[in-house]
Length: 113
Image (cartoon, rainbow, N blue to C red; front, side):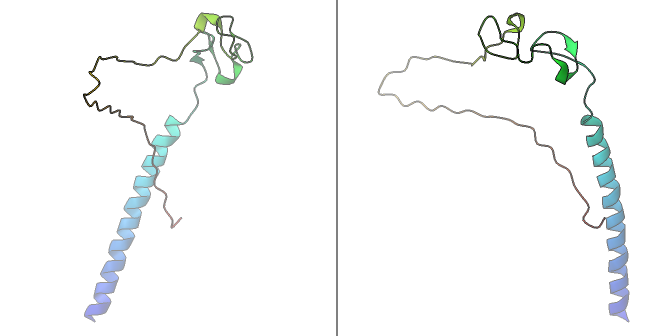
C-alpha cells in the first residue's frame, strides 16, 4: 500500500512539473516571436535612406569610391581595425590576448507535445 501511494504522489508531482514547464515554454516562445518580427523600414547603412531591407536602391550598384558593389560612395564604409603599436626590446617576451563576445539565443521545447 505504501509503495502504491508513493507512485501516485510521484505521478502527481510529475504532472505538476510538466504543467509548469509548458507555461515557461509558452512565455519563452512569446518573447522570441516578438523579437523575430521584421521591421517594416529601417535606416540603411548602404544607401542612407529609409526602406524595407529587400528594397535598397544601392543593391547591385558599384561604389564610385572603392569600386565594390552594394553601397553608395556617400555611405562608403571601410572596415576599421583597432591597432595598438608598442616598442618592445627584442629580448623581452610579449603576450597578446583577445576576447570576443557573441550573443546566443536559446529556446526550450517540450517533447511531450
